[in-house]
Figure 1 (tube, rainbow, N blue to C red):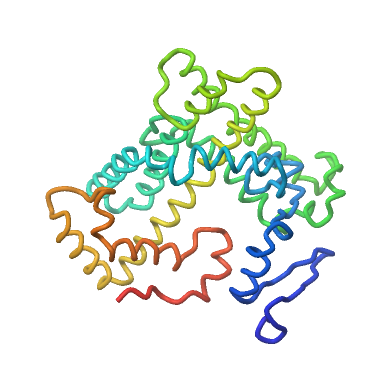
Figure 2: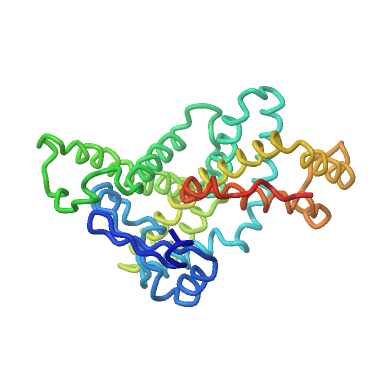
Length: 324
């Protein structure tokens, strides 16, 4: 369509306007140079109003509330804060290698377990069970609801928002029952892990984590501002797991697929690793500067198969990895 009509195409579906940007220049001009104008978020009736995910940072409109959430998220999970997470990542990556070595046929499950364990420890300081962990199950079921509600057209109420007032017992209003189920989970994923960390902090048994740091900061606040800051802390903690587990899992799984499809790339990366770290220890973060090919491989994995939901629409347009 953009080849025929130009870089900016307008479509209308069920009364909703859809703008298609067909070039990097159009994206830069509108989404970067005019970001204050075009940084709004689409309001999904199912996800925002009925499921109750309106607290999620990725759904907030570009306003003061969004800026406060972003500031807190950046403070506790930004690049500078992530330096403190390196020992956790290092330990979990070595645990992943051991699991793959012990049961290589279950490598997808191992990857998901490792990413869940890593982000859960970073965010809340929790150790994740090998199977059927209560916190992982809670958050992942809630995130599944988020994914369902975030797909436009999945529920008729997004097309006809007035249907949100229809009671659940009316034939065809099963979406209300679905919404009620995930609304409980949306609240639970925000509140329950955070409250567990708060209890551990109060008893002096909390392990270092982003949530524990937030709670320590809350102790210095009083009044309504403290309550507001606590809600922000709950929201940012929940979003860290919700945003981190699936995206990291997708990236690692894409990497494994790439290594199978392009064994010559795998051989080059292995040769560089052998030359820098040898075969008697795993690579560490301090080795990154000496591993330019591996670093490029990581970046190419993220470019080749984007982890955002948008990627499923762009998949057929993406070229194969260009590492030579």
